[in-house]
Image (cartoon, rainbow, N blue to C red; front, side):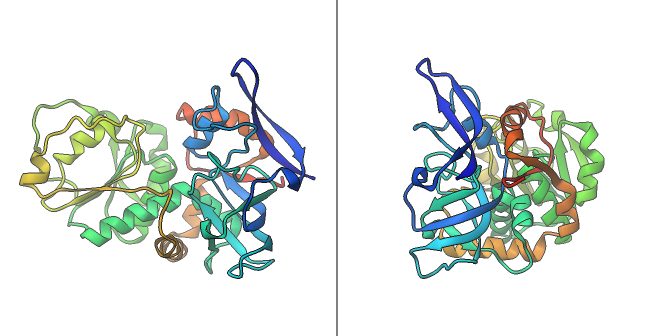
Length: 327
């Protein structure tokens, strides 16, 4: 028997989450059984835990969209007992039981060997948010980052925090956008060289183009903010768009794309090819400063998760919440 956070739905459609003891016979099908050590708290986890269940279709359910741990048993020759592994994506924690459990069973194709230089706790301090941030930075690099500040929106959140730290460590001038003035010192400690107030980028304007300001952007917000910043990008600059917190609509014109050659790069961390996932994790181990990673961590245990699920939906979580599932 082992502990897991189980979300259940009653006959009236009301959901509840509690830590329960369950057996391996309740785990879903898969090639590899992993003794989970750490998971994280992401926006999707909040939706899965919260009232109505959000993204969950089948109950009971174990949320947690990522995890890191040690292989306990494997039917796939690529992994053997004792191997350290990390998993992000593939709708784990949504359609398939996830990381809020001391054991998980998944398909071998979904896993990646933990790269040298990272332990399982550090891997989950990075987590899906940090993995997505690295994919976004890699996409900017592939298209060429222009001279000038690189903008990071939603900078105090999980994706934004890691993107700020990576870009700062790579030597870029990072402009961090936040609606919380109290996070300015935190963002500067991660590598931000300037702080941009969220309201300054949320101002409505009828001008499709403004002064060329940003050499690149990791946008974790979307919506009105994304539309505004497109008109501020330098010629040929790129925006890696990774979030929809500001809404899925894009009230913009084609003018930034036609007259400035702006590239809008969509980043999806869910079903990345193995080679790209491995490359991203190896870059994380190389280019993300571990001392700054430690500054992002808020520790948690399974029993904290119902409350944390609510907090992240309210935008009250800063940095990376790392869940010790054995704590």
